[in-house]
Image 1 (cartoon, rainbow, N blue to C red):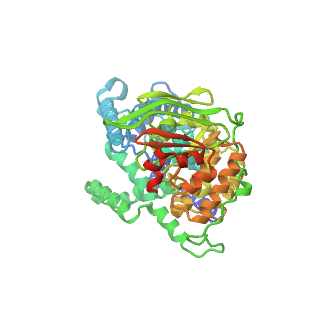
Image 2 (cartoon, helix red, strand yellow; image 1 turned 120 degrees about the horizontal axis):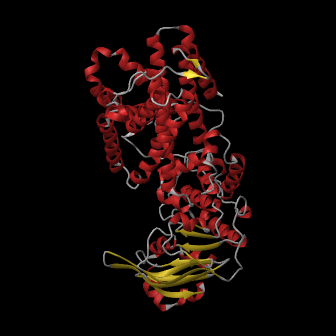
Length: 589
C-alpha cells in the first residue's frame, strides 16, 4: 500500500508540472528526465535483472533517434508512425548485437559493447548522405498526434506517459516468471540451466527489450529537440545510463526514476562546472558503489525493513521439520515409467582433464522407481559423473540414454527439460530471490509463457505457481521462511531449499549430490523418510552421498566408484561386504 501511494504521488507531481509552469526550460528538463527513465528502465532489465552491463547503449539510443529523424524528414511520418518503427529497428539491431556480444560476459561484454558504440558514433559522422555527418539532421518536424500539433506542454504528457509505460512494463516483467528467470540466470547459470532455463536465450531477450526501450527514448528525443547530431551519443552518454541505474538502485523498479531525477537535474544546477562533468560522474560512480551498494532507493528500502514489524521473521537457526507424510504435495512429476525398467543408462563413459582420467569406462543403469546410490572416496569421480549425465561436462567417449532417448552432448537445459533435475554439492541458490521465489523458478522451469504477455502483465498464472511452490516449501520444512531472501538461509536450510526447488521442476529423475551434508541427525532421519516417500510417488533418485547409514537405509542398489572406475555394484548389503569396497572406501570410513 505504501509503495502504491508513493507511485501515485510521483505520478501526480509529474502530471502537475505543465500545469504549474509554462517555462520551456523546466518543461524541457522534465521531458529529459522522462526520456532517461524510458531508456534506463530497459537498461535496468539488462543490468539489474540479467546482470549484463552494456557500455554501448548510446549507440542503440542513436539508432532510435536517427531512425525517427530520417522517417520524419524524408518520409514525413508523424510521431505515432515513427515511434513503433524506430523501436522495431533498434530492437532488431539489439537482438543481433546480443547474439554476438552475449557469448562473452563481464569486462569482455563491456569491451564488445563499447566497440559497438564507437562504430555507431563514427558511422553517424562518416555516413553523410544518410545521417548528415557531423552536423546531424535538422528541421525535424514538431510532433503531432492524429494530425494535431503538440506544443511543448502537451508533448510533455506524451513523454511522461512513455516513462510511466516503461516503468509499468518493467514492473510487470519483474513480477513475472520471466523476471524471476532472469534474476536466476544472474544468480547462478548452472542452477538455472539445471532447471531447464536457456540462459543464452534469456539474456538475449533482456538485451533486446533494453534496446527497444533505448530506441523509444531516441525517437522521443528527436521529436523533442528538432535535430540530432553525433555529439549526443558518445561513450559518456552510455556511462550516464549506467550511472543512473547504479545510483538509483540496480534491479529496483524506482531506481531509474530516482537516478534520472538526480543525474539530469543536478548537473543543471552545476552548469558553471560543466567542464568537470566527467570528474563528477566518476566520483558519483565510486561513491555509489562504496556507500550505496544497492543504490539510493535500495538504501531507503534497507532502512525501512529495519523498522519493527507486527509479524517477526523466523528466528535465526530455527527450522520446521521435513514433512515426509506430505512429500508428494506440490510435486508435479511427469508420468512415471514402468517400475524396474532401465531409465538412465550410461555405457562406457570416460572423460579426462589435463591427462587425469576423472571417469573411466563407467557403465551404470538406474531402474525406474528406485533409489540408486553412488558412493566412493573423495576424488572418485562421483560428481564428475553426474556432471556428465546432466550435460555440464562433455564425455570423451561413451553414451548416455535417458528414458530410451540418447542425451549425450545435449545442453544441461535440454537434458533438464527431458526430466532430469539435480542438486549440487555446494548449494546453488538464487540469493536475490526469496525462498518462495526460488521454488517458483523451479515450478515454472522453462515454461515462461510469452515475453510480451509478461511485459503487459497478462502472462503466467502467478497464483497457481505460488500455490504449488508453497506446498513444496511445506514438504521441505521451509514454510515459515517463504519470504526470507535465500541468501540469508543457514547452510542446512539451503540444502532443503535446493531439494524443494528441484522437486518443483516436475522431473522423472532426481540427482542429489550429497544432500545430507551439513544436516544434523534428526534432519538426516527426516531426509531418509522424505526420500522413501518420493520413491513411492514414482520418482527415481540417483543419490551421491558419504553418509553410509543413510545410503544403506534408503538404497535399492549401490554403485561404488574409485579413481573414476566402477569397483562394485549391487544390493546395499552385498556392496557393504565387498572386499574391494571395504579396502577402497568403507575400511577408512
